[in-house]
Length: 208
Image 1 (tube, rainbow, N blue to C red):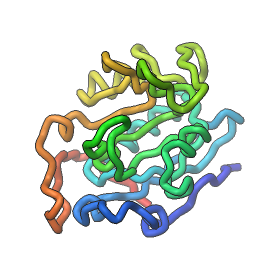
Image 2 (tube, rainbow, N blue to C red):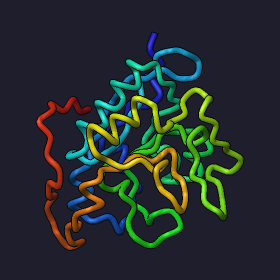
Image 3 (cartoon, rainbow, N blue to C red):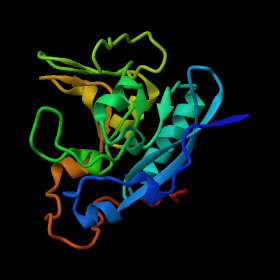
């Protein structure tokens, strides 16, 4: 038996997105439907919204998570939380696309370009000023925790050469994975009307 946690269309998953989101970013988003094993040890179907040019790697990540027996609490588009990061994190929801400023900053978060978060309660954001979600603790022995030597993080860092927030020095964002090429390259201007590719993959995408 598969427990269905999310079965949205792309239109439904993007309802209510910030009006400031440029059309080229919005047009590039895709909904990926994946299976995962949750903390009840049952098979679940969830969804994540991500940029079309990072979708292949997101698919591979969840395929490997399944193969490794890595537990994922929930996987739902953040629209189901009213576009609130706080509500999504408090519910231990893993998520992708969100057009918003970076946490404690003013630039646009790479969640608009493929970044995604995994199990925020087990993998919190920790800075000298705060821990998000509130009350979360980072315990490398807890199921569903991302660590330096975990096969998922090794794949992200060594095979993909992408970035994990657990490697950052001034603060830690253990839940966060982002494409390195986007971080290193100039982003398209906000007045561009068409989606621009910024990464290329040869992996077949299985999109819903």
